[in-house]
Image 1 (tube, rainbow, N blue to C red):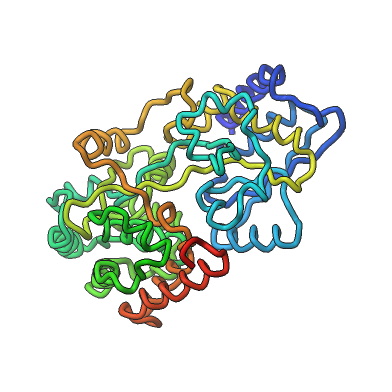
Image 2 (image 1 turned 45 degrees about the vertical axis):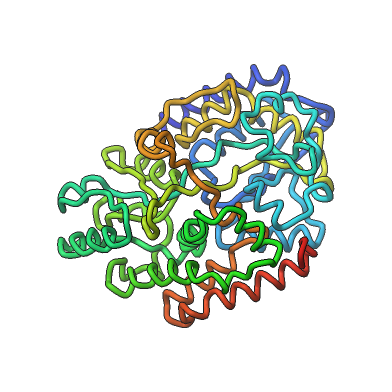
Length: 419
């Protein structure tokens, strides 16, 4: 508690300084600003930031509406369809683009003072205008692993699928779960999906344009079924935890941290969360080796946006300016061990991020776009199909035909080019 109080004092001081520029028209009256976000993004620093801002701006009350991950996307769609908009909507910007027509939904933020400081303006741009403030650069995604377990068992980072199976066999023989799969939270199964699918076609330039426009169907590419077959083989061989359908994200991290499991398919954020909870944990991350010459994948940027139909738009802009202040960016980035999205802030990179950069990206193997970014249709339904494959209610050979059908239906509803 003393640490939290100390952090809060720092936030209050920063907030007072930020008051010189974070205000805006609309703060002359008492306002309540609602922010909708998913549970995973509700990090330790977030609520103190909001309390500090309210303390420095007594006329502003902030209402964080934290939604369980598995309910978030559907709840957002339902609320927006009924005209129930928050003041600030925090989500992956690319996913917002997949679900909605951004210029019709969000407020144009192109003239905001923080725009010129962004490292990658295109990450939050749609139709030539800026619609969000990104909270970080995209993290890499791969296999987060316990280095102590690897050393204890005497195995090295696998680079091929055969090597992965051999590593799993040795880890299992040592009485440790090679992988933890946390299917209670379907989005974590989706981490396999978003990595496996683009890796299967990483050597096919232009394939995503053909898939998105209907020139090529998902069930016509055998490599897709191949990677899902490999995932199922890992489970069928007993190389995953038996409690996968009752375990969620936090439990998976705990299992990797304490050596009950050696690996989980996740992003950098999982390594960050593990070390924050278990400071002595030794973790790393490597590309998921289901294909030869595998590379990391990289996802969306998370961004604060303002729906056009929400109330108190100017006050909401003021709060986002506060989030964009270098002092706040540094705290949020440092707490999450993530690269900041603005040019004038830097934080020390954690060892697993530096290792990924040195061993892969700087050796000509930069991350490729994960499926959530590459696909014009949100891939959440494919995660659900994959969970059904794991529990045996869906055959692996039925996965891609079902997804191809769903993709076509959704593309037609949205009138995407080619459909």
